[in-house]
Image (cartoon, one colour):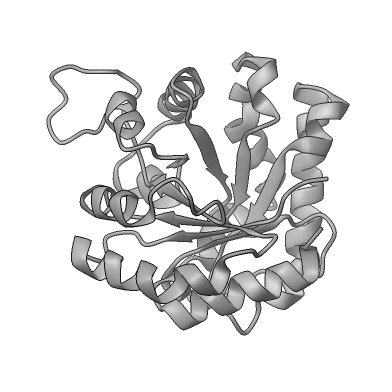
Length: 256
């Protein structure tokens, strides 16, 4: 059975001290939940979070928001997989729509990052999704198919641990969301693509999240869909009470 996940993507929010305060407010509330709660924090907030969390709190995992594919080199401002390893980071978001749009990351670059994450014991959260213009042209499946092509090049024994987040770009930070039925339809289609590119077994094991203006008020409708294994949450993950509520709702819907 696929373990459900609620991952908070804090983006460029929270100092180290603010991150500590957040963790202090939520860690007892999510302890024992059957949902995997992940905090994807800015790089500067990861060390204080790891220090405060230790390795004993199995219900909360740490994630980075990006990384370079090289271990070291003349890449000013970048973070390497070795640096994330040292921080004992569990997950790393790769291919987020903001990285693709604002920093012009290509599918080829994202593929190298995913391969590097696997090679260094980090679990990628690979983001895929279409823009509003692509959606209106009926190109959703075409765009996501292109974004998933790298799967056939990854080590097959690693792919089952991959987490995919379907995040329609037009629904991120806009207050708009895909309907639960539409999100489930696309996620089901993604799973069938994994079947084709990799194997039936892997397609059953890969967790696929929905991301796009998910919050404590609407997460229940998404978690009610069998195909959706959790959520990648932006702004609504910044408030402790909201994050805890989303984890609790996901646990009621998806808890094993």
